Amino acid sequence: MPSFDAIVIGAGHNGLVCAAMLARKRRKVLVLEAGDEPGGAARTVEFAPGHSVSHVAHILSHLHPSVADTLMLERHGLRFAATEIPTVVLNGDGKHLILHGAFGERIEGDIGGADAAAWDALRTKLLAHSAVLQPWLARTPPRLGTRKTRDLLALGSLGLAIRRLGTEDMREFLRMILMNIADVLDDEIADPRLKGAVAFDAVLGTGLGPRSPNSLMSLYYRLAGETAGRQAALALPHGGMGAVVDAMVSALTGWGGEIRTGAVVERILVEDGRAAGVALAGGEEIRARVVVSGANPRTTFLELLGHRHLDTGFARRVSQIRMRGNAAKFHLALTGLPEFTGLDEGHLGGRLVIAPTIDHVEWAFNPSKYGRFSDSPVMEITIPTVSDPSLAPSGNHVLSAVVQYAPSDLGGGWSFSRTDFQAIVLETIAAYAPGIAGQVIATELLTPADLERRYRMPGGHWHHGDLGIDRMFMLRPLPGAAQYATPVPGLYLCGAGSHPGGGVMGAAGYNAAGRILKLER
Image (cartoon, rainbow, N blue to C red; front, side, top):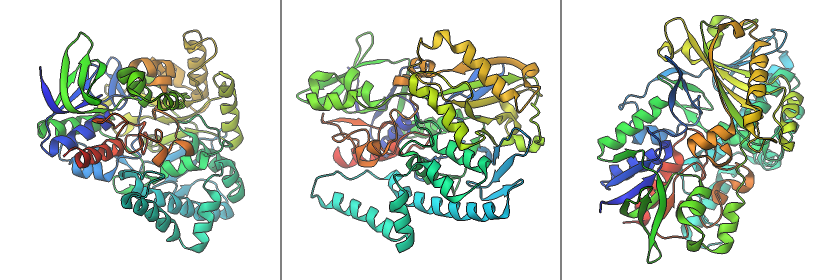
């Protein structure tokens, strides 16, 4: 019977980072992936002959520098097709705004001087507030309710970071932290296009609307990320998101780690109250002193481990973690570069946002509260072939869009509504790019139901659970499992359901490996 120091369940990017970190310290590591290739939702997939896209996550905004540096990802082949890509805020009359640099460092377009000055002040404040959270992304969060020196010092360091903002900014931080993004924007700026785009950024990938509680905190989380050396900057990897995974796999195998694909873990083995390995579908058992799960916490605890190894109250709290996905992914293979009204070809290599106003984003959100998809969706669009022609045949292009809102619990189910929603999405894009329908070779729509089935994400939730204030830091995924260790000795979490959350960041896997190396000497 094979035996390892550690088994990692799932070859998503967090699982790969955790495994690579353990292998780097000479642990004998095996990664088990149920799919036919590693990467999870951070994969580059050919969805039509010769046409490939980053299948789920399609923009790098969070890849943690500690992960990139420790795993030497550039040495293992990671390159960027474009860095600090601009955000184009599409407007129906062609008067678009273009936000250059990191989070609108410079704005191109017809914007009043008063709004430009107000935006500079608000941008500076939001980046300063989110920077308070930045050091916490690559740290194990402290436990609440203990008197251990480590935990007390960690809590104290957070308070000190807030205090270092200065008296006025500290008061602002504490005043604003639980606000919704709509109230913040209404207080600070007037331009409806800019307000719509920032509100969209705050709710992207969540089940929130701009006027929902915690939506500002969601924006802080997004802005705390750093890519290619710049806070809040956005980048496109050459070869799609799968190139990030390829570099991680190269790092892992270079340090002696192993990966098995097509290996479906059916059960986590527990002996004498401690994790002892896994059983695969088909009956094979593999032993290890440590088992690390990159799967969703609900899957890990309730399906792979089972209620009999958990306290009843803990199991109940796991079942209550919110897993309601609200975003779909839409792909187009095109015969040429689409023409967007009022935009030059050079603008199409960035991020295109359809979110005309705060009210529009809120209207798009409202139907999802009642199990209906939006008939006027908001979305983030990229055309990655502008900067990376390798993703399509010469002269052709691919378009990738994250579309909200598309609830996982759609009334009547997605099998009956897929065609209608896809038509609405294409019609929405065509309102800004009138000739695009005639360029379409192939389409693909990934609903939350598809994401759940293909990537084993309960509810199709990209973050493995909501990122509300009650599910962040020392509360993620829940007390008793918020420091990567679980109630079962030898079993650890390393996926997006753990601190600090989702996005192609790798920090959860990085932090989990550090915790394991400390506890399992």
